[in-house]
Length: 150
Length: 150
DNA sequence: TACTTTTGTATCGCAAACGATCTAAATAGA
DNA sequence: TCTATTTAGATCGTTTGCGATACAAAAGTA
Image (cartoon, rainbow over the protein chains, first blue to last red):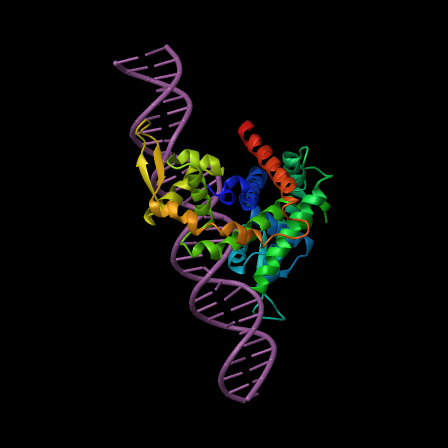
């Protein structure tokens, strides 16, 4: 058995599993408000800056527009946001939060803390977050550059 | 804007993005052999120990069987593995690699190194892997325990 | 033995992700 | 101006991931 092909030696499997399990931890807190995790990410983007074109939202989340479009449509159906043709550039679709979408920010205030407390442990805490965040950011930056170069 | 709801402060978004981008890095190397990333994970499980029931494979990957079953069926159609009723317990379906499935191990030997080289950087390398792996393993263990307790 | 519960797997439906492809609007060049 | 190219989104098809549910085999219990 080749050492480099063992599951326990894989960075990707760890990231994949940690990501799935952490997303699952959000599930009960978000589904309570009819939201999925990617929808919650969209909300965070729009809370920071409202009225953005689809492309800007996709870029911020590092997703493709063909992933974001159906997601936004579902959120529109739920009355969380509106999608309207851009006035400057008619190709753009500007996404704007409704009052319901803005109010969700208050309803979800405690979510990060609740989920955060589920992962805090000896090696992962406020002291070690900077190092962990730094490494993950470097991985993301490296892979993001690679695909742009390719 | 509440600080804890900013995208840049989220561990989960980083894990989610790093996982997606790293999985994408595998894509060209795997699709060459008609494989997807989760299928590659199944192969790693079976290379380590062949002839396992569906449940054991799912547990090893921390996935539900309803995710693994259709995945295995596709791999069966590709002639990578076979699924047969267990003799001891007739409820079990034993998954066994075909010769083609075993041979893939040789064809994919270089994949980990190729992908690995795409993420190596100042903060992420063989010296820092232990620390990073440790933190991710702790996050996974903590979340895994939580769901079992809940 | 008969009844109940648990376990192993499969089925169904929905929401991502993403590659490939299409349309329309905007822009660049001849 | 007229055509070629680029850009913004949308559409389509395939593969996950998972909750809910179904069902048969096995295990436990009365």
